[in-house]
Image (cartoon, rainbow, N blue to C red; front, top):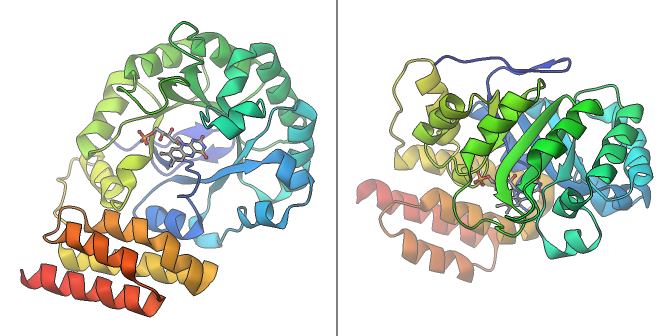
Length: 326
Ligand SMILES: Cc1cc2nc3c(=O)[nH]c(=O)nc-3n(C[C@H](O)[C@H](O)[C@H](O)COP(=O)(O)O)c2cc1C
């Protein structure tokens, strides 16, 4: 294999590795870390179209970006073609790539008719893509699951509609809504979609090692792969996939390197969100970075007890100091 440069409308990617949109995870500091390790494209978490047009300050905060992370994909969710079109009009000038979420399985989103609930309404899917396409000249992608449930797998029909209405790429997470995150993602469905549509197909689901990444590219023929949960505390996954694609070997990660990246991530988070939010939100990331190191379990417990960011940072430094000497 070799490094390819997928073309999504006018956007040529540096390589075929993309950071998945993940609510509560892919904020600017996290995206910057993954970008640093080579992700060719990073996505915001899903942003409510309704929230945007109601001028929600909180919704707008999700769009904050910086030049270092470019190109950035913004993901919108909603159920109403006109609302999505209006939200698109509002942000068209400030985004390099736009994505529409048609895969979210979360109850609150489903109840509003958005996310994977749309898979039950292929006609509406067509109307949404058409309405957004009419407002946006840039690269437009749509992210779907394979269907609502195992009796209603319709990603082929939905994929064709999305392509016909003018989207530039489709991401498939090959699980149904009712599967949520259970079982294994059925990569064979990515192969089938790739053979069905002419626009680029991005594969998402269960890439936890560099070998998984290579395997998905080879087995399915997809144009690019998305890194989701496998990248938690492990941006080296992207570096390793890129190494394998270039015919090089994966490299080991030292405790010192983990400390450096975890601290850089924390500092970026602090600059962006301030001390209090960082204290609460960085805990999970710090646990993920520490996975596999001696004493990680005890460290996880200690992090929950920290009452200030200074205390949290001291715990991190102490843990890695001991891991290095252990
Ligand atoms: C915590 C979490 C939040 C997610 N949020 C979103 C989201 O906002 N938009 C979206 O399209 N997919 C979302 N996803 C789905 C991922 O983008 C991805 O398709 C899925 O996790 C499968 O990939 P993985 O096995 O590599 O994690 C989310 C997944 C997780 C675990």
